[in-house]
Image (cartoon, rainbow, N blue to C red; front, side, top):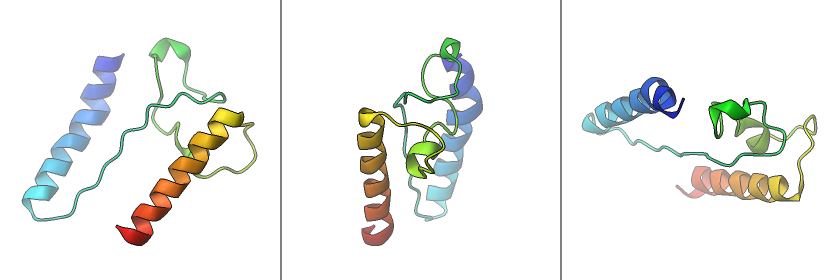
Length: 87
């Protein structure tokens, strides 16, 4: 499944980033690989799924986060906020 994820998700993103950078566009990317306790990604896929970071980035209280999840969420939100405000 990792091969399919790379083929259909990571590779097109990489190609687009390379193309945009050749046009002198600023390109920023991140990779998220934390498996949080309330993930809906099936375990047989092995790892995180597309969109697994959204509940940690925008916590709404609908999913229960354990202490480790909350620490990762706080760090993720803080990192993104710092990037947006300071570059």
